[in-house]
Picture 1: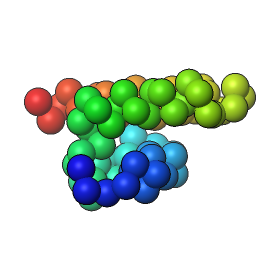
Picture 2: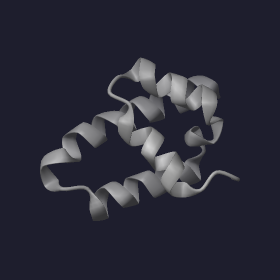
Picture 3: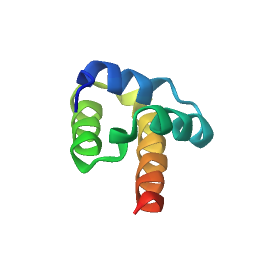
Picture 4: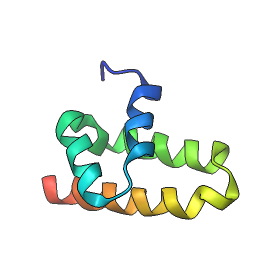
Length: 71
């Protein structure tokens, strides 16, 4: 993965719909890699404020769905 993790996670953070996340994945296909998804889960668990966790959890669901569709 050549793009730094903070850049990848920023793309993940800014997506407010499944469609937006699909566009980010089209630009950064590695976002559906297991390593990225696990890193995102860890960042969310450790650094995202409690009140924002549901929103990020929704994004993880979308990301997993997109990853499954790519298989």
